[in-house]
Length: 456
Image (cartoon, rainbow, N blue to C red; front, side):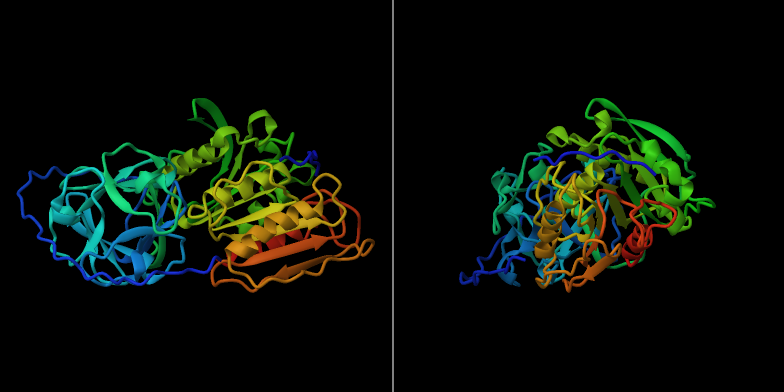
């Protein structure tokens, strides 16, 4: 097993203001409209028995009933995601591809006051009466994001002014497709396990090299479809990112360790329970210039899940060195897309757009790493120790010469664990206890990584 090294590149307590103003009565017009059936969004498979948190693509914050209001006219805003009942919404089918969005906290639905068609009209909550000003369709955007389009006005639900602040207004505005009008649907409870839009389809994708267009460039990845693939069974989706100078074939083939180390050992460990992906970086790296590698991941997810049966709650990313940096970047920028990441000897190499939301995180690093010092790995870890609401601690690390590893599990918010494994060794993803070697057949990392991933 061989790998090339690289140089390092460059819970917040929630506070609410009390709602002091009395609710103002709003007369809702009962105008007649000619309804045209909307085409359902393919990027989001809506389960009407489930509850979702809607996360804004621009800010990473959640659609929220402000001040925990329960009254008609209560303001809708964005707020740091905490998955509280006032951030959970159920999609009630109104027919023709339209839905009413019901608050779990108040039982009221999203509503445009007085059936306004004006840009900037505030979104509020109101008792459900089924009016067209309470109905929204889902319009596809890339990366599994959707836009909510009001039936009566044909305008999109957006965070006003592209604000990233807690408490920023949510309004309707002409559909521009901007990031502040895009929302990720994160299922938090209820419903069955329907999987993505590829479930039930006869697949056209096969194991092997694939090519897609992304950001105007031809991009490649190696796909492994499980033996005995069942299109009615939602599978985990695991991305394995290569190191600097490595390739997608190095990851998919397992290098000198062969199939025991394919996809960082996940082919062996998952035992045909996961769809595996090894993407190819531009110039054999993950510079992520202008976010293009994150968009590439968005495009791979969309292509794969349109064809194969994936559980959208169980997407994972892992990688070594530069690939670890890319996995960390996805944890920062796509916290509602990826359930967990595993970072082998990583550093902040591919950027960290966002980086304020919780994601399950497992960092693995050698105490004698002379390419990316262990302090870089600790820094990445500590971001998610904070984001995931973990109790602070100083994890034990093995002594030089011990040829052992120590894994620490933090005490964190339920559902968002953080683990840290430090080992007596250098820059590599496949250390073996008891020797100074790298061996994908004998390494302990693949077993611990799979145990971390398979808990979800």
